[in-house]
Picture (tube, rainbow, N blue to C red):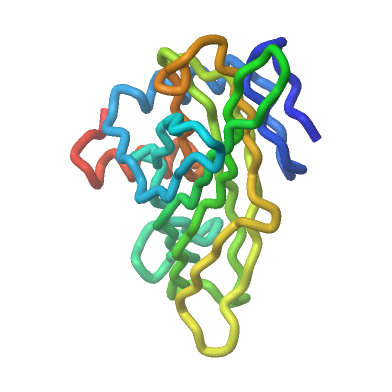
Length: 207
């Protein structure tokens, strides 16, 4: 499935569970978070072609890099936590395919999540959604949401999840040399307004 985009815009390829169709809410999300710190992740990104082209910057959006989810209807005490998660790594690889008349970069991306079971998690399951967006000059060109579902096996209270089956393919057109430096690929948890506010408060950035 290809995310619908204008000609020449980046395209994210993989079957999404959830689609973002409201550009106003997306732009509001970005304007709210770009004023805050963007933390680069530890990324293994390299060109597999003959050239020594640089990969676009791949990073975790700091205010969306962690998630504490509480059981619905409960409070926000430590005993009410369903699960906690963080984006531990972004595994990325770049390719510069030879396409006649068009220069582009293909980024293959696989986020790695570390999730801990909370005291209120009774079904041993975990479900969350994360986003991948392509940004250029502080403008979101593409954004897509992906859902992750897993469970805590046996007596485990912690699980490491690598969403790479298959990895997310991001096609970015490069109209001129060094255009790849103008793009950023930002990844984060899709948070509710309350979850975002708690993340900001924990960093002393609440508004």
